[in-house]
Length: 51
Ligand SMILES: [Zn+2]
Ligand SMILES: [Zn+2]
Ligand SMILES: [Zn+2]
Ligand SMILES: [Zn+2]
Image (cartoon, rainbow, N blue to C red):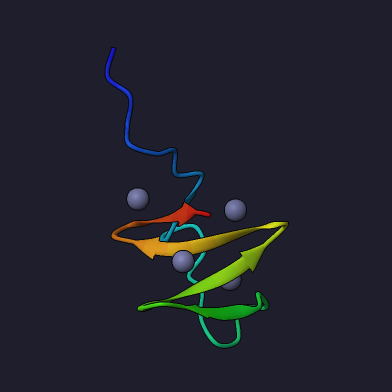
């Protein structure tokens, strides 16, 4: 059985983070994270990584 390198719980299609999406944005090195319920989303292709 092959495991993905991470589990993506949220897709960009389901929620597109942006300036007025209601989540707090934080700059993280070369990208922007969005605070979501105790963790942070970082856009990665068609989904968000969580960290
Ligand atoms: Zn958002
Ligand atoms: Zn980040
Ligand atoms: Zn999340
Ligand atoms: Zn990813």
